[in-house]
Amino acid sequence: MSLNHVRPWRNIYRRKSRQIMVGDVAIGGDAPIAVQTMTNTLTTDVAATVAQVQAAAEAGADIVRVSVPDEASSKALKEIVRESPVPIVADIHFHYKRGIEAAEAGAACLRINPGNIGDEKRVQEVIKAARDHNCSIRIGVNAGSLEKHLLEKYGEPCPEAMVESGLEHIRILKDNDFHNFKISVKASDVFLSAAAYQGIAEATDAPIHLGITEAGGLVSGTIKSAIGLGNLLWMGIGDTIRVSLSADPVEEVKVGYEILKSLGLRHRGVNIISCPSCARQGFDVIKTVEALEQRLEHIKTPMSLSIIGCVVNGPGEALMTDVGFTGGGAGSGMVYLAGKASHKMSNDQMIDHIVEQVEKKAAELDAAAEAAE
Image 1 (cartoon, one colour):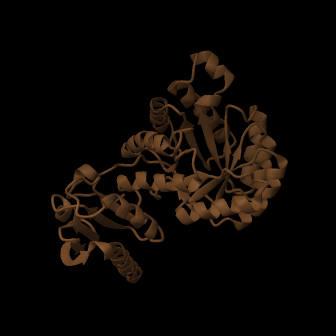
Image 2 (cartoon, one colour):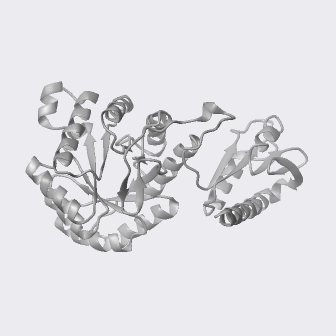
Image 3 (cartoon, helix red, strand yellow):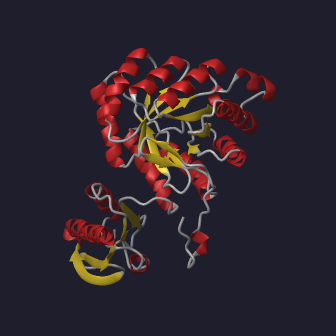
């Protein structure tokens, strides 16, 4: 990754991992950290599932996972894969035959859980199907469904048990000369997840899929995921992430990107820097930011926008953003372009004007990027 020699305290040194492919998306190595989500529609409802996949992809999802609990879902998966704009991961639990069927249906990756997929012979059949259909595998260890012998050995889910479960399954794949795999060791407990991920990161060079499983609702789950995933990513661990929320999958994608953006690991869309507002504000900051977040959702170009209520921090924040607005007095504020004060704008027209300025800047950045290719 590129290093910041001017501000070395911003550098993150990513763990070195092998690179695999999930469809046409590279995972691991020097590839960008991929953002994933999962559909929550009935897989047999092809139209609803495809619509959710497309919405997630539009929000920025690189990969989408779909549950395959029964044979009817396996059949539906074939059409879902055909209509999906991104690679599809088939989520397999309990029934190894669903894994075989999903590979035949065109899934780009099979997520199998060591705790419930069955004995080694069944895993070998899934491996053969994955190899025959150019399909990768994710070993998905979960604290809530560890193998019985590991629970008896350790007494409870713990980092050591989760790492051992993952390594046992890695051995099976490697013994069958299958290396196109990634691994996750998820728990709903942030401490358990973090310790397990640190352990597996030291024990293998396989790409790592990060997640705090069953994190909770939109607010609580976002906070828990930001703490758990953010710290691991800051340590350089993680090649692909999924934020697990009891919410719309699109929200998972948004939160995932915000976590990556906050660490400078991935850039997409407008990064809005805004103040919490106070009595000094020259306009309604909260309502303005809410409106701008909605109005600027269509912008995919990485860029920054500062919305600050007064001149205490406004000019300073604007120095480091592409577009900025700082509240002043008499019903107007200052517009900043490329860090410099440009012109005043009335508060009642500022939202439309800022959207216009952001769209203009995005077009300039896109044109410059195309010219540089």
